[in-house]
Image 1: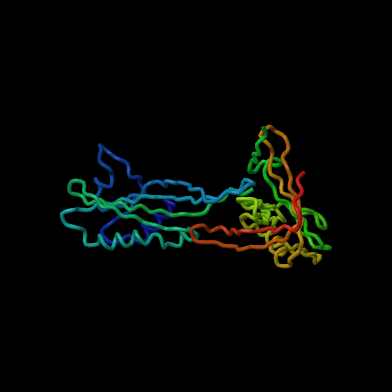
Image 2 (image 1 turned 30 degrees about the vertical axis):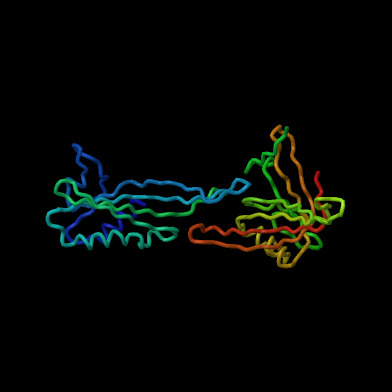
Length: 134
Length: 166
């Protein structure tokens, strides 16, 4: 899922921002996405399975929710002219053909301020059905 | 004490519902059943309930302060929910023209069906009880939703006559 999201971001990135496939690790207690403004970082998949139904002969179905967080920071004093376009573009990742067949697609957006940076976090969650068939 | 503990997915220990189509001639339940009217084990049952509900006749007497009652005939049925498995639910057609009717076909053709419900093994390791009888499939309502994209259906096997416990 992370690779598909990065591919989508690279294909649709708005002017003034760049995409990296580097993980958003922390250097000297400062996350890379805070240190490097206007660069879009993508985390690894976090996967959680929620039981959906089970049968008496051992068959089981679960909803598998995969969540990837996308981070980007920009100057908080003067917001980037393409910031809104960036937000819209990242939200639309749910509509990308790479994610056809998902049963639910949700993106939550949270903004925060770290010193002079406006940090936006996009939590992209996709749900698909998984079965333990014999 | 021997409590009944079916173990899902464990052959011979799990609960099973086995069907045999009656009055079917060459009609089978599924191709996997092997031969004419060989039994079929219904796959992917989520839950099952066995009803053995007696009717009750009540009357009053002038010398009693409470009603008197007596149990009369029972209405027996099995009901539950299952995940639709295509071959067993809809049946198959083979190259030689033999039709396999499946569970939906049993309901659609109102065909009498013999059933055998094995409850599962007991907690003391002994073989559990089996309930057999004859009935008709009804109450199929296949449903699917975006939140739960798996076809499931309730079912009722309305029993004609009594259960036999072995």
